[in-house]
Length: 480
Image (cartoon, rainbow, N blue to C red; front, top):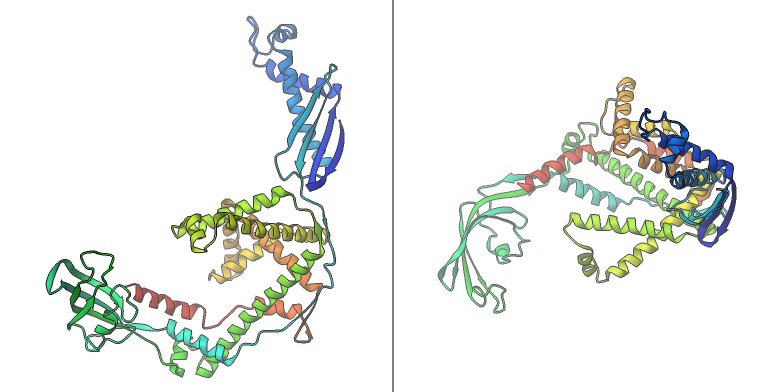
């Protein structure tokens, strides 16, 4: 077999492959034996008749064609392996020529991943500032936690105030006459936010459970329902239930209860909140630095991206967008109208994003290859193990190992191990770039080891599990 490789612009490759007569004759013999076993000759068992009798019943041209087809596949795969080529699209066969001596030649054209010429990716200088969490930010977060920890109380002897959740029954009159469809039971609303009948927001204030309140409204002349347009409405409203959201008071006692006695004072609570917010800010700062670092590395590289790669990525982005929209019962046209744009403009935007994604992926993959950055099974097992610990799986060695093996099998069956490996690889590449960069934060050289230790700490903040439970209870109460 002879192979010539021609590289064309756009990462196109043309392989011209010639297969000699001896290889073809050998493959024809393989085809003969495979087909001979299925030939029936009277007086002989299948495949046991003399060759001459079998050949009379086999079409030599079909045997040759089958042999050539098999050789095209095998010789193409061999040529790819020998020349270290990986097609990223279906190869196109052309110029198949079969000579009188049974030798043949053909060519295949396909696109491969483009060559990436890296620029500087070590010693990149990044000068940035650190985000500092202010007292105001801490106070704002504390207020959110108090809101999340609020409880709902059923009240019977208190007057309605804005923000209360009430349930009412009402009957309606139009111009003093009972309206046939004007009886409603169990109408829920949050007083002060109702938009269906805005007069309720003021008319119910001060009323108690069991009270009957009369509220009047005037329907506009152009109101959507012609039966109501231009008429005076009178509503007799009976208050059936009243629920009020009661925020806890920020005291030492409340802090102890919320934190299961791990914290004892309001000051300790605020310090913990500050630590939690600062950790989030540090992570955000680090992500921003890594993004700037990758942008500089990608900008310094040279790569000619094949059109097929951009098209495939853009198609995937559009598919993901339409999938997300479908969850909200929206179409792409609906989304375009909402964004005051067109589907074509959205597609163009996604194509631009796709180009950036492909370029970044190619450059980072090239760095991984150059620096021999790999993901091994131990990396994946460790990632699974850490996730299991966060989910509350017992952390003793035996239980953790057993659950890790079980989870890995589940992920492998679902086809998610590849995704996990991809994320780990990405983090390894980013860590390599970060380690080899010169990062200055507020004039101080960045210490990656300390930053890694901080990110690996288990967050014991009261804003996690404890408040999540309070929030869940609050959400359930509101849903009722």
